[in-house]
Image (tube, rainbow over all chains, first blue to last red; front, top):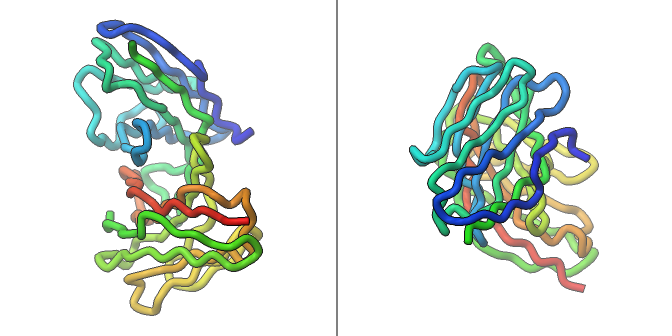
Length: 117
Length: 111
């Protein structure tokens, strides 16, 4: 158990629907990262939050949004789902703060597998 | 963050050392080199990181060239459980940032 909890583990839904993936970071970690991994592809960075604030954005689609709540858990919302959104979605956390210097080690959750039919 | 280049795949005999190379020729002075691995579809697992000096921990050793343009991850005695995709990442030491993974090296350890 890495300490990063992601729910649900598996999710099957239909095209056009909306889903929410949830991530609870490791205790004490203030930064949360979201990644998408399509079949046999690498990890695509989506977005990063620090203490409730968006800090960095990758190639996240406009249909996707995320937020980090005061208790530090984060949610990734995927709407108007398409077949191509089927993927593993990983959340990672780190103790990194905007003022940090030095190494930044990410701890990943086990992922949420989304299947869009 | 610097772009990294890794061979797409490698094989290694069980019990032998696995040496996984990574090129990061555009790395800047404030960027660490990190290695992670992903076994099947599990969440990536941190292995080791370094800035200038060579590093060793219970999982692996990291050798960084003097000019910092490349590095090698060494798994000293590879086992079948080390079969995974290994990612090399170069990322800045300061502030918050994107932390980009490349395509990695698929290591297959052969019995």
